[in-house]
Length: 250
Length: 309
Image 1 (cartoon, rainbow over the protein chains, first blue to last red):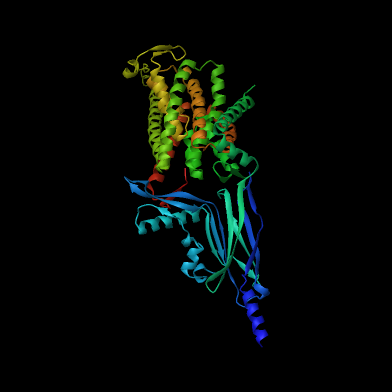
Image 2: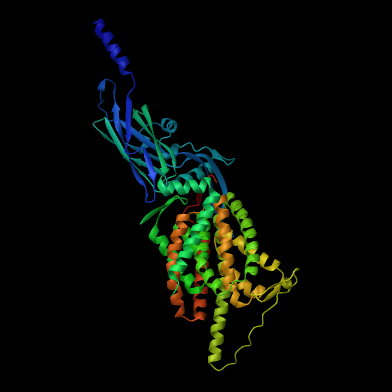
């Protein structure tokens, strides 16, 4: 009897060895080339339970794909002498250029507010770091404006029920990447949630960058701007000259 | 056909951009104007960021002015001395305009400033053109009805321009005035080129005729000559400072523009010039009214985002 208890205890201890998430992506690098008009990123993987014991209750998964953070200034328009003009502004120090979250269920029913805030799951839980002396109510109005504008541009997406879980083990979700996506280093974070607690997480890097001639033009414009400007003028003059020769009447 | 623009960082329909360039090119060929004042607002309306629209439109105008300038050059209708003074002023003006552009960009007022400037200038120029075109048409009616031809207007001398020091001769323009006058005029238009992405021909040509009193034969050629250099300088300034010149966008516009201009020139030969001027005045006023409406109507989103620039 004692040995059985000891083995049981040992099994329980190893069972406490973490549940693991194994993740893969349809593509680890997204190339923006001349014909780029957005991409479909497939995030998929498996949940590895200790000793292969799949629990009966279906697991909850939250998949967050986020892009590099950058400062953003939000300006509010107001009517001045009949014309809509930008007036007050609030600067947010860390706004992800892209943020998409896909979950198995609505975020509110996954976990409590504190947990979703810690893991930044959901658009309302982003830490945007507002930097201004405006009141809390004002800041939150600007924050709502920022989120609405990003949603409108397809750069902030929240889709409940978009993660499919098969047999309690395999999970997958499609994340739509729009054409206006900023370049940089991205990450796909996957959180396994059980009974309102995050019990496993994984993070997989994605890089989104311009390739081919798009990249060449962009790098020239950024790093050799004078040469780029001269080349642009030369190209315009040449095109104009070709047109003049081609259309001159005999 | 979708095409990703490397600097604007967005996917556009290449056909739409080429057609846009073609439509503006058609009007340019028809009326003999650069059309930058239509390209920039149309690009912004399509969703191109204003800074990219202004800078790339300037690049496009450089290319679009070449064939016209070459044609006038072959006929000896470019006053190099006058053009040189206008260019010198224009480059300085473009530099100042670029500084103002950056400043407005930083305080988040560039979009509204571009729009207000467009409403003011298009409204003013369109109104003047409408008045002139209607006047000519009415005068013709009167002559046709047996009335006397009104006396030809003498070339006016603007007193303060005549008073500027260091007068010199501009042979092809038939003028004896101070080079400061074209320098100042070029400078004023250069500021507008950098801020609004226009060649400024529609301001420059009337100013050369009515303010400087240039002889009509050299006006258009010299204006095109100065537009090439000032828009080229503007391209360089935008490329090095705001890095917002999208060469792919400029070349797309140019492709459409060149083809459109040919059709425009042919269409213009079948129409009477007074009618053309009247039509252009109405188009200019319509664009101004559209922009004014856009400024006063409540925007769908009150909050706009501005990147780290």
